[in-house]
Length: 171
Image (cartoon, rainbow, N blue to C red; front, side):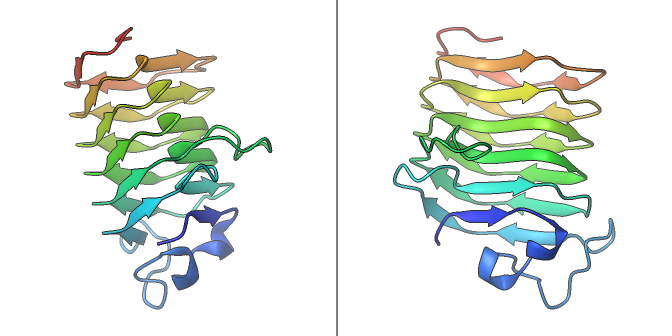
């Protein structure tokens, strides 16, 4: 699949990899679902970018790799997944590898990031910036420059039962 760019709630479409675009409605009971995709970004920015959304969504069972450098915000960071200025996401059971960053959370609230594998990323496995009320648990984070990096965090976040190993700096 091609890299995915979702810049608003209206972009949760089949063309953007949303499997249930005809039946989902973005509620907690029927979230938008992106699943079972393999995305090689080939250096064209994030594999999956979701920004400026308030509806519920799930990203699960995806392999996301080779995400690196563009020069335009918010795409410049080249994460396997980049979530920006958004709420109510669940990111589970994904492989994020050989990217600039495994996952970037920037200005997010209410995300659940669990049972993912962020490995062999050039910079951070997980980057959390200016974000609150997020649950980061039961992930494997290995062979990155920095395993977990938090900057400008505004409030409580939970970092529980993660496995960090072979990172230059773990946390």
